[in-house]
Each structure stands twice: as structure tokens, then as C-alpha cells.
Image 1 (tube, rainbow, N blue to C red):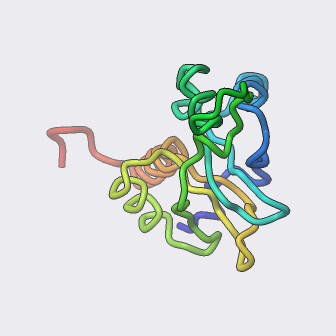
Image 2 (cartoon, rainbow, N blue to C red):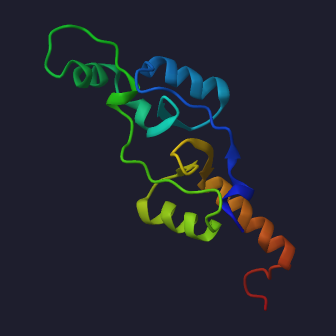
Amino acid sequence: MRVAEWMSPDPITVSPWTSVRAARELLAREQVRHLPVVQGERLVGIVSDRDLRLDQDAIDRLARGGSARPVEGEVRWVMSRPVHTAAPDDELASAADRLLAERISALPVVDEEDRPVGILTTTDCLLALLRASAVRGAARPGER
């Protein structure tokens, strides 16, 4: 099985300068948990619902960098980077191993030019496992 078969295509993205508030609203509206962060068309980070749970005061302190000037927190202050990614032609098992090894729950799927073309989550991998088990008529625990 390949990543392309199980990824969600055309992920919703944000820029590094998107406000944290706008990113939170986008996650809620679109009912997703991860947003690849792009500058131009290239992937530069990823932000998750967990990253955006930071207290707004903490985000503002990061954004100000000690400045007294109030600044609305932007995604660039809380996004994860460097980003672990997958390619559409990668083996799904290899991508699932990467998710486990890095203790992350999503891999942006990128093309040769680091443009996001999809996103693969742990849920996608579990669904693939369940589908493969059902096709093979997997035995129940204790059965052979």
C-alpha cells in the first residue's frame, strides 16, 4: 500500500503569518487537527490543534520576544519545524513507522518541490490496517 492511497488530498494550509486565532477558527470550521504551513507554495512547518492550545498570553510573549509592544500571536511562533514528511509513492508501512518513531500524528505529503499535496494521519493508517485485516479475514484474538 502506498501513502497516496490513504492520504487526504489537497490539505488546507496557512501561512506563517496567519494569526493563531484564525488558525484555531479554521481547524474548528474545517474539522481537522493539522494545518501544513506554507510560504509561497513550499512547506515550512506544520501546526496542530495541540500547538494552538497554548495560552494566548504565552503566544504573545513569544511573538514580542521581550518587547513591550503587544503583538497578536502568529502561527510561525508555534508551528513545528523541521517538518517530517512523506511522498505519495512511499510505502504506507514506512510512513506509519515514521509517525510512531517521531511520536507525531500527521505527515504532510509533499511533491518533489516540497509542495503539500496531501496529509497522512495516524487515523488514516489505522483505517488502512482495518481494511487490510477485513480483506484477509483476520482472525480474532485467540483464533488461528
